[in-house]
Length: 334
Image (cartoon, rainbow, N blue to C red; front, side, top):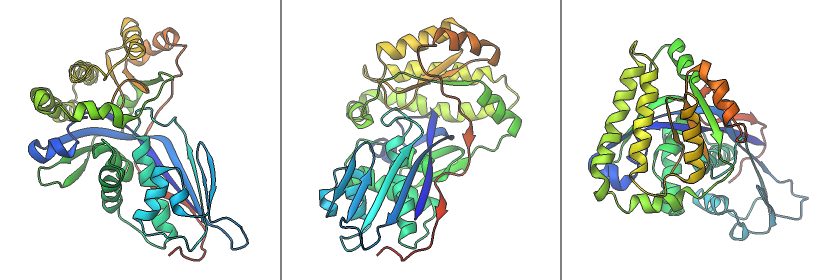
């Protein structure tokens, strides 16, 4: 049996510049961190006395005889992508700490975690770079999703990083090397509220991706904010400047598409600011999911009280990325 644990991510700056159709021409960069909320994938080879070939447990329970019958598109196509045939019975379970389709890069964390577990079950060890590249290729070229390249990279590598996307297609991961005290200071200024609604990121992103030319100046500015934000973190500048930059970035992002925000998101953001928040943003492509709020610790009780109807999720940064947390030797999957 294999269990993989893959983190979700919080993206601070640069979102939108990680789409290949943009960065292949202009380059891109994202500042993001993975957090202590995870996607877990459990895989095991079914013993021969079971009368089924595949059992897949997610929001449904599937028991089928062939890979092609599996309803979950990532599992069905992921098994085919890795060349896993119908010769060996297989059981796959998915569990997540946060809701799917909520702006936390959950679909990419699932893909990364699935490949981490299945390659381990095949007796293979893949590097973080290989794992990220595999998940990016799978989501963009096999599933044909309108997704960028930041979520898979963040989930595979883990940590607080600048992820740079070069015109030649290469992706560079640069850890943000600041003191633990500065990281704790940043963490202490963050709150995350759940809107109670979800959406398919690919649907929102489809509108975004189709109009890059009209958003050129905005995306270039959002790209430049990555290094500006890192400069704030790496200096003794008041951490509140990071929050102000988040607010500026959120205002820019809303001008990209009318699908970026919603009445619920606007309500959460406005109420937070009325009670002392400095900035924030909606996490993910837009419309719903989780809203990140930046506020001084002493202001946070009033913000939580004002938004008590929305779940507030505590978060800490994590540094490991996708890992195998449990491994029991058994015959190798081929």
